[in-house]
Image 1: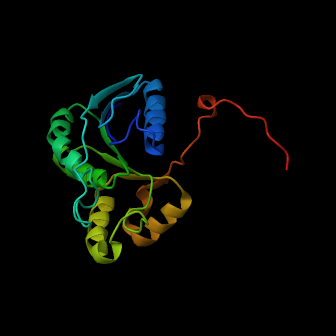
Image 2: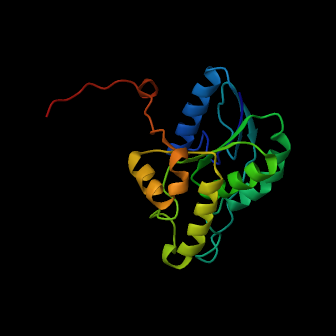
Image 3: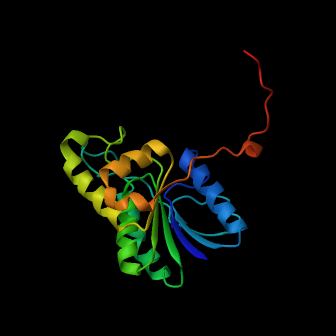
Length: 196
């Protein structure tokens, strides 16, 4: 299978999303799938075709802007490149956060006619990390609803998120799956267990 993946975060970025994407896509490539990843970070990517598009976040501006996150500008900048490369791929896989990647996934899935798998590592419109939810909640709810109805499969990181989305979007309930975050103990070495 040829997988076209999009994740703003990737090593050497130190955040958890980077490690998750690197580990998951590396394992998928080891299974014999061909993976092309678009990312803003250029790190070690054994077995992956990495398309790096570095991006400097804009300077801080008024509190409501940019929305839903600063990476929305990176997503807009790479959309045409990804759409052109989509031909010949079997599936589109997007990783969120940032949440604007969900909007990009919906855009690409519609234009490239690819099945779309949206991996939401965090809940979206109810996220405590989004500023001004009280003011922009209606817009977020529309974006989230359209995206979740458009995705062919929605991966979530835990059962609580699946229950939340199952209640909010009953039409999508059969497309919700859980793929928990994992820890690769081999990357961190072993430590003795100290009894209480």
